[in-house]
Length: 320
Length: 292
Image 1: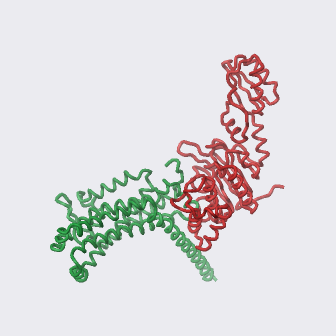
Image 2: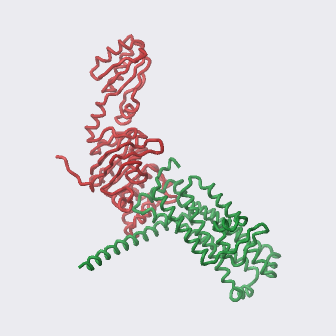
């Protein structure tokens, strides 16, 4: 049975677009994010950070409206009592120690001295940085910097946590540790929105996935559904060869090829396949076994190919 | 019944306002702690200390290292005071306080954009107007402490050469205290006005050096400007309060000094307007470090 949520429990994008001058950030986004763990997945430059920055008011939409738990991002006094954002900026105020960093911004939230100290240590303990807390952040490793930023963004115990590529550049140990913290936060009822450019990285912990590419939402829903959706989406490939008619007849026999069309110059053909991995293997076999001389095999729909490779982590090759 | 309702809503309103005011006070104090530690102990502060020391060192050299100069000061106190007002105007006001304020106030926002750390403030439950106010106060405290000590140190070495009895007489009976207070007040007013301008420039311009130089040039050519334009500057109002009129040279346009009751409120209103514009700008500001 589908749970009905109240607007104060949802994150809602209504026809949101963001342009940086002439450049498109995101376009016509209509999205409702329910409580739980939601992953925004897309290749680098797809618009994930733009969406997250829009949610937190760091940038303003060119068009449309955004509401987080019923609050507009233009109202920071209300919003950041309930929302925490751990962005991608790997930078800190100059000369601070880990503890000072977390504590000083809790004071900016308005917490009294003792309360801020308590909350700062709790957050630092949670990310396992107690021993390093008195050292300057400038001397931290990338993983430690990531964790202290996480501590700073969860220290005020928000209901919603927005995390932009939190696993990016972490070594396997730090990655496992960070995922453990996310699971723990989600178990405690926190609403997590995590961005990543690799679906594998986040799919096991996500309740739902939003796929984004070139500023548009490609698919959204449960992890399994989205995986199927992207896997079923046919990929278009152009093959340059000496005998395109013969090759078309042979590839069309494969069950995963849904369309084969001759190129207007008669020097190649376009093929649409629902299983790129299998298709590229077949092309390798044909290149060796048949009399057709294949010059190149190139995905035509670069965006979709990029999305496919980035998100699914397919081993399918490009040129033969 | 109606009165009771009005009373209830007034009490509610007052409690909300009080809560907001108390929160803003806490937040301003928290930001002051962060900013003052940066302004006084950060790497960028070294330059400020050096700058603030320049006039003190010059006056020290004139008064102590050069014994003839010291005896000149004792012999001709009036000329020494005239020389000091010129040093104060050209070196302390137009150079030390000007460039010091440029450095402190431009870095309040521009420095954070360069360091990519401004977003931490934007991600706190903090009104951006409160951030502007807090940063400006932090800048003012830093500038006021550094440059009033600079002025005071310079005056100390001006007096030092005259010896104890002459100074006591001058301080108590010769209007010395009024002079010291006037120099200090002018220094603070300079920090106030220049501070607002440079915080505004630091926020509006990606490369604040050029607008900063334009302001510097405008302030320097002020003595040549026609009377009306002369009044569109900070230095005119500051010079109006100097205890001894500064000698602007043979080409200067002569304009009567502006009265205290006009110039001080004018500077305060101007500062308020510039800060309001800064607050409006920061409300619409987006964090896009990559494009800076």
